[in-house]
Image 1 (cartoon, protein in one colour):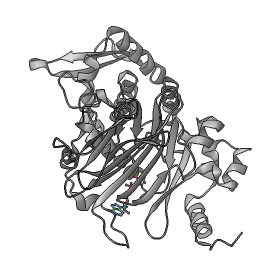
Image 2 (cartoon, protein in one colour):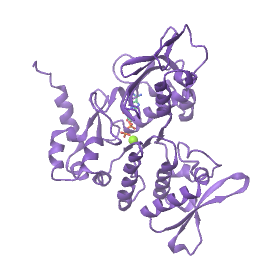
Image 3 (tube, helix red, strand yellow):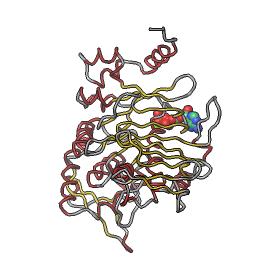
Image 4 (spheres, helix red, strand yellow):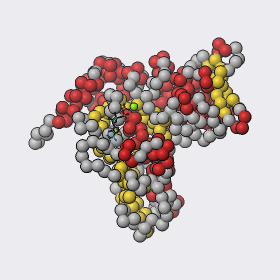
Amino acid sequence: MITHFHIENFKSLADFDLPPKGQELAGFTCLIGMNGAGKTTLLQAFDLTASLMVGRVEEWFRWRDWGPDDVRTRLHGPARNDIRVVVGARLANGIEVAWDATLSLDMMRCLREAITVGGTDVLRLQEDGSLWVANDDLDGKTFDSVPFEFGGSVLSTLRLDSYHYALREMKEMLLGLHSLELLSPQQIRRSSRESEDIGPGGEMLAGFISLLTDEQRADLKQKLQKIYPQVKDLQIQHKQYGWKGLLVTEQSMAGHPVTEAHINDGFLRVLAMLSQAYTKHRILLLDEIENGINPAVAEELMDFLVSLTSDDRQVIVTTHSPVILNYLDDEVAKAGIILLYKSPDGRTHSRRYFDIQENAKKLRALGPGEVFLDTSIEALVDRIVKEEAQPLTAA
Ligand SMILES: Nc1ncnc2c1ncn2[C@@H]1O[C@H](COP(=O)(O)OP(=O)(O)O)[C@@H](O)[C@H]1O
Ligand SMILES: [Mg+2]
């Protein structure tokens, strides 16, 4: 699992850590904060990180219709032409791995990369183009220059089977990172062909569900009914030329299903989230989970999202909804609710919400969502920012 994420020069994430340095990311993370604090930006930053491992950074930019100028930090201070990402992770065997990469925004590939395993180097790509990689016995191999063209990370193209196992595991982990920050009901309503994935906006959900096994489809229906008891059946509509659509039958419908065109936004978003239980994605990112969703179904939805973490997955969501927060157990809330806020210079920072003393105190008497309702985020951020501006007195 990812224990730490650091990024420099990505929009308001000028020099950003999640969680603050010295702390570890939990299985379930819920990002909160004012509008414009940088929550969506952070999900985009994770998504960019995954694209480095795919090796198609240019496509990532093109798909969003962005250029380097859209992402470089535009705040006071010298402008930079690279993005640095550091990911700390713990492998299944308990070993700590760190990947430190610097992406050139001119070349759309990493200029420098280093991977350490338990503090020992296993890969070094340097700005002069030289590459050093170790195998499992930590014997290194040096290339004066990388013997192939690559985009993003050198790991995207390097044949990893003969090198240190941690390189493969780090790559796998980051490839398993899936951001649904672009999930939209309009996209989900489109027909699609068979697909291994639901697509960034959910546009291939029907095609993805069409490939599930009968068992998985039955399980999905059951999960859906737990949240929407009025659902009687979920089917795939097979259209001409291999296109797939969704058909939903409700108890009251006397057997006549409706197509996705007539299904409400919240339902489609929930269905897309539930479908993630059957993907290979290990780290799931969702923006504003409460969008279009009735508070009455929030509890079941939260239970589902938290339950994904017991399957050794990580889930990172953003929300503005106190209702959502109230369905978290105190322990999950303490470890997982993270406040994003901006300092007056426009940079985003993170802080565990219940590490803030006044919130921790309130949590003894109130639920996490009630604390959130009881505390003006604006005033809270004001206080944090003032506190941080105080010059530290010598010990
Ligand atoms: N290139 C940039 N440099 C610095 N700040 C930026 C840049 N691009 C966007 N921002 C800031 O980030 C904000 C958007 O943050 P966003 O992640 O959408 O917030 P949230 O999702 O928390 O509401 C913008 O309002 C702007 O203040
Ligand atoms: Mg947002």
